[in-house]
Length: 311
Ligand SMILES: [Zn+2]
Ligand SMILES: [Zn+2]
Image (cartoon, rainbow, N blue to C red; front, side):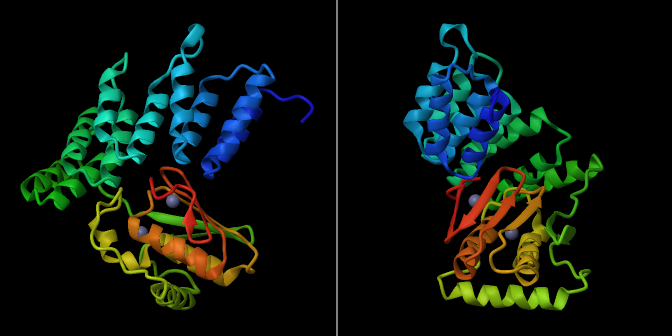
């Protein structure tokens, strides 16, 4: 580009970060400073999240602490949320809580949500319950918070509390909507619900899923025991083998040539079982699979995901 502005830098840094290429993102950030381009709060968000995704914690802290120096851009809630994720990836939950408590402003919902994710990944029910209750109090009409809280109570065996959540949900008239994934093939979007039977090629799609599951089981795939689900409800759990993302992938594999990377979009966070399965599907088929879910980009390649199993 002949003339670069802060937006082009941000887009580039964010793109590398989103796909798990942290070192390049940090390098670009440094190059940007050298070229005397002033970073804005979006730049800091992009580079901090790149550090967090790629486990570059030293770089991350250094950049975080450099904010606010010389009265430049002060860290905001979104930057704190990034650092909470960074600590969460290292399993440092007490430190993450301390960071929230030490913030010079009232902690926001996205900070508690970042802590909740950290608790889910690290399977800390106690602190997770605390974070989920905070969120629930702050955003009482957000359906996701109920689902998360419900799943936490169920996993912890707090059946009475779980029943209370369901009761509140009903009283408020909030209903869980079915989740879906979509994939574009030959410029046409194809939308799949979990356990969906409406696609004209459903037989082929289901056969492909079954074949893939059999194939990846040779590489050590075992269907996940019930784990803490991010934001899918119990009904989804029952059709786990045919979650919407698995159907979309199977359809993508049978409808496109082998060199095409599959691109899938969905509004819900991917479940742990699908994540494991897709890593292995990418490995056995040699395909690149990119899923944009509610939380981030997952770039599956050679049996790994760019999120490093944290989402
Ligand atoms: Zn799933
Ligand atoms: Zn991932």
